[in-house]
Each structure stands twice: as structure tokens, then as C-alpha cells.
Length: 443
Ligand code: ADP
Image 1: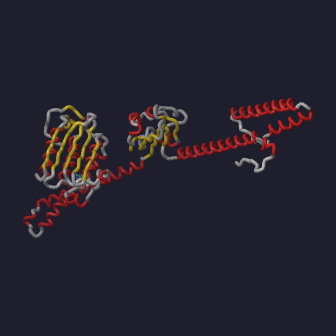
Image 2: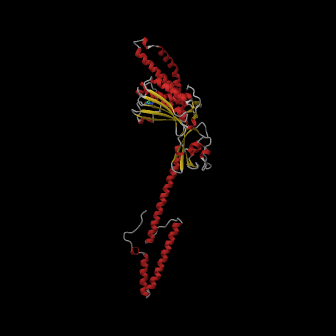
Image 3: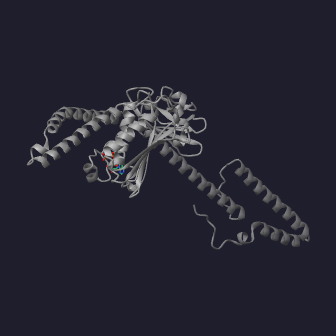
């Protein structure tokens, strides 16, 4: 809005209306013979008028009333006009903000994902969209201000919510209103006071994932029997008896061995993926260490130096069979990716937070940093040719990661090209036990 301040204002405006009034009063005073008295009366009148104008304006502003556009053409009118313009701008800005807020709310309300705004300290619900009613069973208005952990009670999320900024997304949980519906939950702390909980319906995705898993398991299972037969017959043939066929026979035996291992690894992975938990048993880490050392020496055929050390003196709660499969994958990798004369050490130690860790350290080829994050993906290899040449299936680390997840443990990998690698399995304090009598580890 433009303010109309004239380029050539009238005299009253240039001098100001009060001055003109005083000048006129003085002139009249001279005419009637009492100039000072006329001036004093006029001055008092001007002062009173100014005071009145000021009061009026202050009252309007204080009561948040809109200031009318001044039409008098004096300083008061200009001031009124300025205030009016500011008020209008402010009103427009506020209106735009309200419209934007409405648009954002409408967008959030229309999302197919459930969106819940939570108060950080109390975890009370501040706002939620329509999908939150369909997916999480929240109802308006009863559930505004309800503590979310309690409101979604069938879901074990109170502990998860307490994790706040560090809470890992929950990828597959049952909906509190329909156990057949699978949800993925994500907590996004977006300000100091407020969190956003986003729940997505992943039922279809989980169903597809199930189909994929079953398919891989079934194919692997179907392949197992014919492979065992072929492998068995090939093993019976001695290349020394067939000098002409010897190289072909050796290669066929090698490849059938590789295929058998691949099928076994795929079946192991399918079994692990379909499990939510494991049967806990006491796993003697002392015996585990001895077994792993023997395996490393046998696999490396004495080409590397293998050392094993138990600095923790505790045992582990978990599945002996699955843990053996995870640890021996790490050990077999260390042997396969470390050239002759290198060294491999297997160390069990206590963590600072009371947990226990098993590390497999080698002085092998090492892994470039850019590959580290993806190593545990199925069939991910740094060098496919080297992995194949060394009899790898590309599934060893994926198996290790799954086994550790089932034990609430994690796999940490550090490596330097040309120097070697360290693979560390970290188990939480809840899985360590005081050492029991040591038996040989027989998974
Ligand atoms: P693979 O059967 O190919 O060894 P893994 O899943 O066990 O499959 O390992 C994935 C990839 O990680 C390997 O192909 C290899 O490139 C790399 N890798 C694993 N362990 C080591 C190690 N100790 N030293 C160097 N590279 C390794």
C-alpha cells in the first residue's frame, strides 16, 4: 500500500497545523490589542488538541483496533497512515502464515502414513492425522494429550520411545488395532520440544518379502538333493585314474563343492531370516576359542600364524550352532583373505559397558573404506574374482550379521588396505555369564 505524501505539500503541512493556528491567533491578538493573551489561549488549545489526538491513537493501538487512514494531511494523518500500513502488512503476513499452516496441516492430514506430533518430555500426543486413526487406532479428541506409550499399549514401544534421538526405526511391528497389519515406525525429533512419530503400513511389502524368502528357501531346498548326488558321484571319481580328464574332473569337483556350499549358505540365511529369536543356551567361550583356532589352522594349512587369547573369562548366552556359524565365517574369511606368512588372531575381551566382544584380526589384503558399509549385504564382494577363486559364496558376512542381530549384538569392521582387517562381534552385557566349567565347543 502506497502512502500518499505529496511532492508539494500545502503551507499548513510544511509548517505544521499548530504553527499556523498560533500565527493566526497572534495576528488576531494584534488586531484586538491582546497579542500574548490570544497566543496563550491558542497554545493551550493546540496542546489540548495534540493530547487528545495522542490519547485516541494510544487507545486504538492498545485495544488492537485498526487505525483509520488519516485524511487530514498533517503529521497526525501521516502517522495514522503509517500505522495503518504496518497493521495491514502485519495482518497480511499473519493471514499468509495461517494459510500456509492450514496447507501443511491439510498435506499432513492427507498423508497415507500415520503422523503423530508428540511432546518430547511427557510423550503426550499433540496432534495426529487421519491415518493415525486407521493404523494406530488413535481417536480425536480423546487421544490428544494422551501419553502415546500407554495409548499404544499392545505395542512394546514405551522403551523405544525413551530412546528418542537414538531410537532405531522399528521395521516390522504389528498394528495395535489389527495384528495382521504390519507397520514400520520411525521417530523424528524435529525440535527441542516436539517429536514426530511416522508409522507406515508395510503389510504388502512384508508379504512380498515373505514370498521372496520362501522362494529362495524352496529353490535352495530343491537344489540340495540333486547337487548332493552329483557331488557324491564326482567325489568318487579319482582324477589320477583318468589322466586325460583330470583337469576337467578337478574343476567339476571344485565347482560342485562351491555350489553345495552356496545352497547350504542360502538355506542357513533363509532359516535365520525366518527366526525372530533364538533358544538361549550357555556357550562356553573358552571352548569356542579353541575350536575356532583349530579350524583356522586346518583351513590355512599352516600357512599363517594363528593365535587365540581369552581376556574376558566369561561365557555367552546364545545359540551355539548359530554363533559357531557366524564366528567361523569370520575366521574363514581371515584365512582366505590373508596371504601366506600373514597372521590371524582371535581375541575375546570385555567391553567397557560389561558386554563381551570377539575380534578376528588379520594382516591380510584389507578392504577399501568405500566398501565397508556394504560388506554384509548378500553377494557383495570387494573383488568377485578373488572371492570365487578362494571358494567364497558372498554370503558369509550376511549370515554373521543375521546371527548377531538375533543375539542383539553388532558387527564392527575396520580395515586398511595392505595392512589387514578387524571384525569385531559386540555382545550386550545381558548376554554375558560368569564362566562355567569348560567343555569342548561342539555346535
Ligand atoms: P565371501 O564368501 O565372498 O568371502 P563374505 O560375505 O564372507 O563373502 O565377505 C564379503 C566380502 O568381504 C568378500 O568377498 C571380501 O571381498 C570381503 N572380506 C571379508 N572378510 C575379509 C577379510 N578378512 N579381509 C579382506 N576382505 C574381506
